[in-house]
Image 1 (cartoon, rainbow, N blue to C red):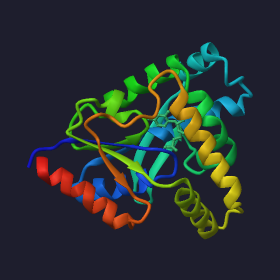
Image 2 (cartoon, protein in one colour; image 1 turned 60 degrees about the vertical axis):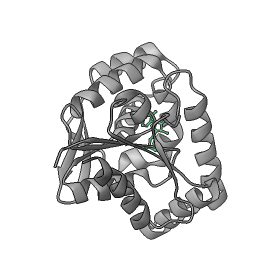
Image 3 (spheres, rainbow, N blue to C red; image 1 turned 90 degrees about the vertical axis):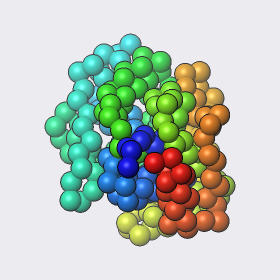
Image 4 (cartoon, rainbow, N blue to C red; image 1 turned 30 degrees about the horizontal axis):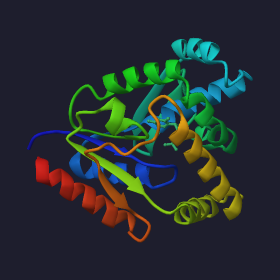
Length: 222
Ligand code: C5P
């Protein structure tokens, strides 16, 4: 069977990483979470109290920053300059600031270059916002996942409750809407469905149903 590249894009909290991991596991492909890379840089920038609108300083910071995505028994780990930041990059402060870091052209150019070299061979599932449009424009399968903002906030809320994190449904809804707005309106590589992407509305689907739909699209081409 031939190995391909699968691009999964969509708005915040649409379930991209959850289904991407299942699809990668089923196919024995590697999974690359590009959002984690922007989150790691945002964590470092906020720890250093860098002004997030300062593109030049952020770009310089990124030059001196090593971000690794490591597969381990406990799932994917994210290393920032060798330090495990898997949990920290999901914090509220990173989530609320990441879109301001990700909108800069210089940051995106460097991140896209790094992502392309990570996916330099086939047998890869990559998720993000601009994978089908910019990072892997020649991906054999492109998926655009959507769901209503109510459903996405509800899923995130239930996830937080399960993890024992305090959470407010209305607050989550606002955060998700705000992040989508910035990601969709930015000048460089905004969140956009690629022309040749398959759109899947996951609002009333289970995780497994979504994964199955993606796998069907994959089996059509491999
Ligand atoms: O996927 P996740 O929600 O972790 O992504 C965090 C943020 O990183 C997004 O809201 C977006 O601002 C940015 N991002 C991006 N391009 C990608 C992946 C993520 O701009 N390919």
